[in-house]
Length: 550
Image (cartoon, rainbow, N blue to C red; front, side, top):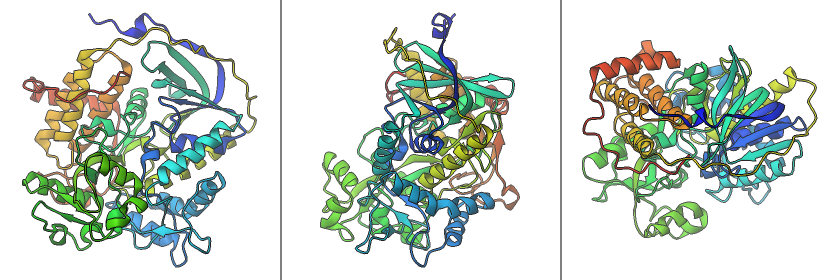
C-alpha cells in the first residue's frame, strides 16, 4: 500500500487568521493585493513573485479603448464577435468600460507604456480587433514591464506579506465555506495551513497539462484541481486557446512569436513558400486564433510545414521592435530578418476555469478567483487578443472592492516570522513523473487543436489510469484538471470557438450556452470511459520529460 507523505508530515499552522490570502504571484494576484492596501494581505507564490507568471511572458499588451476614434462599445463588439456566441454580454460591457481606468492604474504603478511624440499612449492593432487599441511596452515587452512595476510596488507595500516557494495544494473548507489554503514547501514535505477570512485564487492557467505550451512551468492546472476538489463549479473548461505561432525549436515551454508580428504584416507560408491563409479566411493572417491554429495544424499534418515570414514586413527592424522574439530566434539559430521562422500551435490560454460572478465570487463562500484560473464569461468560447491581461486587472480590482465592502475594518499588519529551514526534501517519484508525461502527451494528442469523441473518451480513461499512480496532492490536482477539460470537451458535441470536434464540425445554435461541471460529474464520465477502455495505458509510453519536482 502506498503511503502518502502527508501521513507522516503533519501540517503546521501559519499562526493566526489572515484577512485575505491570495494564492498566486502573477498579475491578478499582485494587482488585487495592491488594490486591497492598506488592508493586510498574504500572497503565497510557488515561484518568486512575477517569475512563474504567464503575465510576465505576455508579448502583446493590454486592450483598452484609449485612442481617439475608438470606443468601449467597439471593443465590446469585437470581444463578443470572437467569443462564439456564449460571452456574457454584461460582463464584457463592464470589462471594456473599466479598461481605460485600469490602464491608468498601471501607469500610476510605474508601467512605462509606449507613448507617441505628443505623450499619448501608443496603440497597435491585433487580430480580430476593429481598431488599434493594444497598449504596449517596447513592442513585445508589455507583460514583463507590467510585472516588474507591480512586483516593485508590492515589495514596497508594508501591508503585503509575500511567502515564496510554497505550492498551494488544497483549499481548507468548513462545509460550503472556504477558510484557508493548505500549502507545501516546493521540493519539500513541510505543509503550512494559512487560515483566512477571504481566499483569492489567482494561480494561473493549465499550459503544462499539454506537451507543447507557451506557459511557464507553474501554469499546470493546480488551481482548478484544488477548487474542483473543494466542490466549486467549473465553467467552459473545453475552451482552450492554442497560440498559432509558437516557435517550433524543441524548447519547453515553447517561445512565443507574438500576434503583433502578423499585425505588422508578417505572413504565414509553407515549406514551398506559398501563403495558405488566403484560402482559409477573409482576414487571412489576422483571422481569429482558433482558425489560424487549425490551418497551421493541418498544413503541418499534411507534411508541408508552417513558417512565419517576417522578412519583407519587418526585416532589419526585427531586433529593435520585437527584442524578445528576436532573442528566442537567434538562440535557436534563426535570423528572423532573413529566415522564415518555423512555427507550431501551442497551448496558450484557457478560457474556462472556476466559475465566478461579476465580483469574482465563486460558487463557494469565502473564495474568489481572478486571472486565468477564473471563468468570468468575458471570453466566451474564444479570447480576443490582449484581453487576458485586461480581464486579470479588471476582476482583481473588483474582487478587492468586494472584499473591502464585506470587511470594512482591517486587522493589524503584523505576522510572526515563518521558519525558513528547508525541512525534509520531497522524494522524486518516477511513477509520478511518468504519469505527468502521459497526461501531457494525452492532452496534446487527444484534447488539442482538433478533437473527437473516441479520442476524448480514451483521454479520460488514460488520465484516470495515470492518476492511480499519483501520491502527491499537487500532481493529483493536475490530473483532475486534465480530466475536467477532457470531460467538458466530450460533453460539447459541436464545434464552437476554440473547441473543434472533427466528428461534429458545425456549430449547433441549440448549444449556444455555457457549460458547467462539478468534480463528481467529471469522475462519473471518467469511470464510464474507463469501462470502455479498460487497458487505456497499454502501449502508451511516457517519453516526454515530466519536469522538475514539485
